[in-house]
Amino acid sequence: MVRVSCLLLSLFLISACGNAGDEEPPASGALAADILTAHGEEFREDIIKVTDGVYVAIGFGIANAIMIEGDDSVTIVDTMESLEAAERIAARFREITHKPVKAVVYTHSHPDHIQGTPAFLTDGVEVAIYAHDSLDAAVDQTVSVLQPILTQRSFRMFGTRLPQEDRTNVGIGPFVDMHEHSTLQILRPTHTFSDELTINVGGVEMVLMYAPGETDDQVVVWLPEQKVLLPGDNFYRAFPNLYTIRGTSYRDPKTWADSLTMMRDLEPEYLVPSHSRPVIGKDEIRRHMTDYRDAISYVYDQTIRMMNEGMTADEIAHEIRLPPHLAESPFLQEFYGKAEWSARMVFGGQLGWFDGNPTNLHPTAPLEKAERMAELAGGKEALIEALHSAAENQEHQWVLELSDYVLRLEPEHQQATQQRITALRALASRESNPNARHYYLTTAAELAGEIELPLMAVTPQDRMLEGMPVSIFFNGMRVGIDGESAWEVNQSVIFEFPDLDERYTLIVRGGAIELREGAAENADIHVRIHSLDFKRMLAGIRNPAMAILRDFEYVKGGRIGFTRFMRLFQPDLED
Image 1 (cartoon, rainbow, N blue to C red):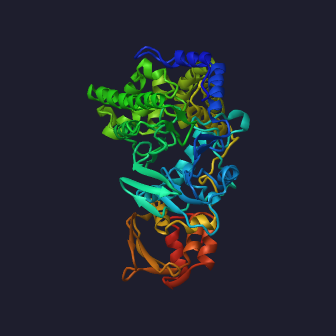
Image 2 (image 1 turned 180 degrees about the vertical axis):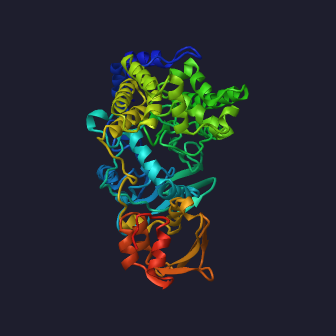
Image 3 (image 1 turned 90 degrees about the horizontal axis):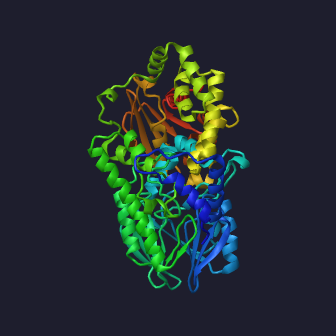
């Protein structure tokens, strides 16, 4: 295994492991660059033979794909973020064996593990696809309800639109192989389970075990005869993303730690993560997995302790530190998650948004607060002067906080914008966490007008759309309506899909949405459309005005009435 050189690791630990309660001294730009370069060696492109019949492809994208070879067939565990990345791996796997793939296992629902499956398959060979029974719902939530915000924040976190010279590794992989013209195709599971499932593919016995951690649908794969464990995303060579800055629902640290305990106690001799290189040796695996679960457990327990002492999330985030023996672990360096981000997540997940301070029950609106801060400073010009002074003194974090106020008051203030850009880039140069570094740099590039982030990572192709249930597109509509514009609306529309023999009634009632399966009696409008045409329209592939003109059949209510209804969701629509 590649390890960070002793010099770089010791320098990194000096910057990462201060005394409890002390501020972490920022790494210099040169040191941060050296640390990231060394960590990038973990993801150099390779096909590694772990043991007989077990191979892992690393460095072809953000995740790994794993091949388990049996007597007459092959199992693939995780299939990458795009068909292009998967095809490169599939070609390399076929150099090892031409046995057909007869099983695929998804360790969880994250896109980098499920979007390249067809690349591994052989025409005419039936394939079983295994996953936890909650995976489909998790996929649908990501691709419909939260797609715009998750896309933009993911692009910032991974540095997707940054020039090559500004990008580094992404903490758990070399890069994300997903671009505007990438091809994505999710094949849905054919077999699901809730707790545990034993399968045999080509004479290889595999136990699929539910082990929630980074996601609630996480599955690990255990090969009892070979003593090989595939932990999915519950273990990789970086501090775990208990919270990811692209945004996520609550990730329960207690459950994650329990899953690691269960996996460790299997006593694997080979550990093959879905990110980073494999670990070999029972004792080494046990030691690193114990440290990993202890770090998660420690952050959770100590955050709860400080919460019970009345500390706020901000106070806890500045206080939390790993014990030295954990902070020194090469598997717990903060290349992906951070202890302070994790503490904030625990606070929010356990107590919600309110920090206990009555000041924050009804806080001053952001614009009014900026105005009052300017008044407190002696006027807006005095606030701007304080920003200039902070910029001259290279107080980069304070520049960001002051420029929040100035740009709230004057969004087009050029000097404040430039000072903010400079501060973001300076903070990025010192940052050894790739997620934070890329977020700083991308945000700076957005402010400078060098980058514009899309609301959708790629344009979905018809085969991908066909695999999505039509109901999830209605979920996207529900969260897209401007509620205030519909306060006076009380209308119901039947959407009929003849190709699916399905009908749905969408009701707008005073700005609230209700979706009902079937055709409601006395609906105001009734339209009929092929499901793929409907999906194309809502995915942004088909112009909504053209779809309304040419793709819909109007059973009741007419085109003009339907257009006005759809304007609630697409305000730019014309009659």
